[in-house]
Length: 289
Length: 338
Image (cartoon, rainbow over all chains, first blue to last red; front, top):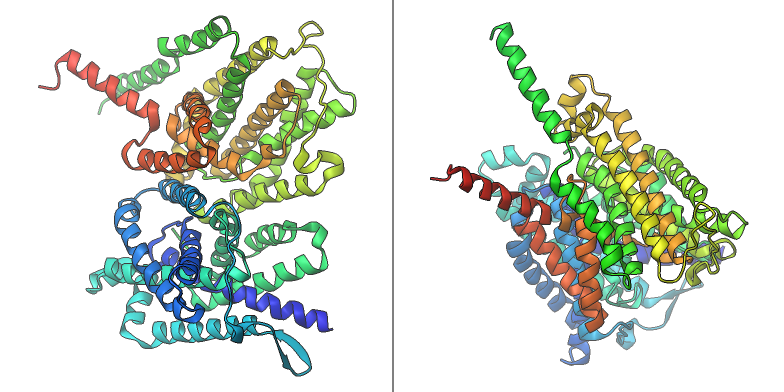
């Protein structure tokens, strides 16, 4: 029983990270129909940025997180302007090729700059160790992750449902052409969402260094997870993405805990089954092209 | 339009199709050059066989990507199935190469047929995901089933018998090269005939506009299923050829990198051209051979740059560029550019 709860707890923390990283991808896909296989690169950038800030600039873990968010968001805008914009109108194949090219360059660059090994991150004392709650030993860091995840989910839902900007994003996701003809500058809306989404991915990557690990192949290793979260959650839906990420996090943790001999088999099999059952995502928003 | 004019335009279109079907001098030169490689570069025949095998594999991807318009990131699955089939057959005492090749093609084809029902539903994104998923699933299966596949250590000691009971596969790869060339030529010629037949034309119309193709009575779903199956057969044969010529199966035959590299080769060479795969494979492997000697870490970097540059500035790949150049030259000769 304790094990079951432990798996659930770890799985939810893991799912929170998947959510933070994938939510940007989900909105970009929903908004621009742009297949961005390089989304994991932003998460990896966030992770390496955290390592640099803490090890070389001497900035604390918590203080470094907002910096990571802002720098990744700005960097993504540069990439969007130079490489992504020319291929929005091109075929999905061209989008796949460009973004796979970016992934390869990122892997080689990270390998060159940081070496092939895993990067360690020293957590502050307040986030280390266990916390006794209801007779259970809970990792403080994972609790912190969930709190951050919950706060960001609330902020995103509030931002999307209650603000003018959120209404513009929702309108653009629902029907791009109509939104445009109503005077919404969809390309500007997209740039802002893209930057926020990439910033969140960077934040997720930075928070995940201790859970997911960080090496040059990070963006390729977790690519399937991010895509799966987005496809199952339904592109463009924040709540769908959250549900899918938590489900996937718990399923993957349970698979690794109960049947370790199967390895990653569980998650790939789950992915094919989910794709067969829900070709349009859990919440059923149709992703028509 | 009166009947006479209809008859004339009809004859004109049939003539154009006939002209496309005819073997062009460049194609004949291409295959003769491959025969010449045997005599000119007798010391690099092992490498040349690798290029041909990869080119054949790229041709199979071209069928589904270039002709049917399906994006896949897991095509190595069928290559790996073919490679492991021959390896397992040889370990259980089936050493005759040609029959093993046929069995490998059939097993891969069966896998292609079964997975086509998963892959062909949904949109580009779900297709991408399901092909990626199937590829990773097979890799993980081969990785875990160490008793059968040898896991990451690979399958050692794959013995292949004499071809036609006469020619041994020696370490210089002489008979291996001719064997690979023969198989590659036969499969390419068959594919070529298929793609110039009405069947191949219907495939093109599905790629251009599926709704309209269905409206004129082309069974799009069934066509895509059988082209996917046929592509899987060719991929399986290519994988089997690799096992037979190297007498070893490494787990990388199923890896994601192989699927991604293959996609890149085809893009370099040019899609929907039949020869783009071979040209792209040759260019890719030659450059990789040169650059990896410097530092393997840089290779991925250059590969990324190349991929982005080709996608942005060289649509249609090398053959597309060649076609544009020769068209410009022909225009100039006719003096039409003035």
